Structures are given as structure tokens and as C-alpha cells.
Amino acid sequence: MIVEPAPAKLNLALHVRARRDDGYHELETLFAFVTDGDQVTIAPADVDSFAITGPFGAGLAGEGDNLVTRARDAFRAVFGEGDAHAITLDKHLPVASGIGGGSADAAATLRAMARGSGVAADDPRLMTIAAALGSDVPACLVGRTMIGRGRGERLEPIEAPHWPVLLVNPGVAVSTAAVFAGWDRMDRGPLAHGDALTIALAGRNDLEAPARALAPAIDVVLALLETQPGVTLARMSGSGATCFALFADAADCRAAAATVAAAQPGWWCLETALA
Image (cartoon, rainbow, N blue to C red; front, side):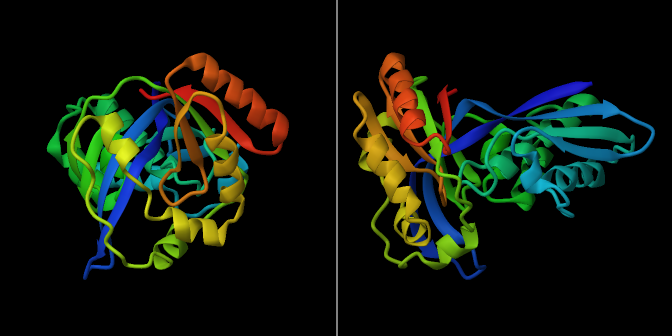
């Protein structure tokens, strides 16, 4: 049995520079990952099976096409691995929430399949598979703080401290396609130069405005996070609706988590840290 974590992805900054002729968008983003997320388990079996558990498993129930099984099948097609597996996805991240849950799950599946088949973690074919599965999957495959360019697949590692971070989702699923469709096509410039904190603080999320128009609850989340004592940065991640708050002190993060939970008990709230 192989157990592989699928940590949540954050976009500490996300600059949309242009719409490309291939339908994708030219991006500059600062990816980061936290210490918590989903989990993928793979075990030998007589026939293939796929099960979803966890508090957000019901949101994927009956889904005919899951990135986990697509990653499994793509790995087999490239590496010729034909053994059957029982795969379980333990889903702890909200679905369609801007923190790369599906992409992280696909990347964890690729890592688990590679471990089980003796494929090196840095085999370039894994990155090729990841890029074909989705724009965020290559970053999730590496799973560390990086600058991403292009669709997000051109990656440059950057050092970052392990800041405490609070993730909050108001229970609203936002369509990534709809958010990108609402982008105003204004190029507001590249990421800043410097260390990860400098880039994050000087940056922005160009998808925040269209996401807030689609899901006004994001306004409420950000307003609450921005007023928490000790917060260094509060911003929406990806295409939303999950927002994050960075703190220099773990006690401030813990206090903010308690405040949010008391004010909005129906929201999803995760106190964690950057990996």
C-alpha cells in the first residue's frame, strides 16, 4: 500500500497577462503549498477500483471522469504499467475552490504510481503527463513554492519561510471557466522581483474581481480576514472562492481561526502552514 499526500495549492499572487490563441491564458503566479490537504492511497488489487471518502467526498460522488483515474490511465499509457490497483481518495479539500484539489489529487496519484513502479520522481515524463492533465498539475507534482509562467507549467523554485496560514471558504463553488471569462483582459503587469514575501505583498490576484462578482460571499471572507490582528496578507487563491491569510505568528493565526469559526460556523476553515 502506498499513501501519498495531496496538499492544497495556493496562489499567493496570480497575474493574468493575456489570453492565448490556444484558449489558455498567459499567467505569472507565485505557487505555494500547505501542510494539509487530501490523501491518495493505492493498493494492489485483482481489478481496478476507485473510491472517494472524506468530508468532501460527496461532492464528487457519481463523477464519471475524475483526475485521479485520468492520472492513473495516463501513467500506464506512458510507462506500460498494467497491474490493477484499488485507489482511494480521501477528500478533505472543498471542491472547485481555487486551491488545486483536483490537480493535487492527480499529482499525488502520479507520485504514488511512480513509487509503486520504481519510476524516479524526477523522470521528465511525469511532468509531461502532468502538463497534459491540467495547468496546475505540474506545480502540484513538485509541491513546493515556485514561480509559474505560461499556463503555470514553466516553473522556477523560490525559497519561502513556513508562514502560518489560515484558509477559509464560504461554502460556494466557483466555476474556473466562468471566472476566467469574466477577466477584463487588462494586463496590469508582471510579478515583482525579490523574495517570496516581497513578490506576494507586491502582487495581486487578477481573478479576484470576476470571482467576487460571481460570488459576493468572497467579499465577506476577505473583509473578515483583513481585519484579523497580525495578518500579513489576505487574498483569494486561484479562481476562488477559498481565501487565505498569512501570519508571522502562529498564535495570531490560531486566534483568527477561532474568530472566523465563531463568526461563521458554516464556513470551511483550515489552520495550517506553508510547506
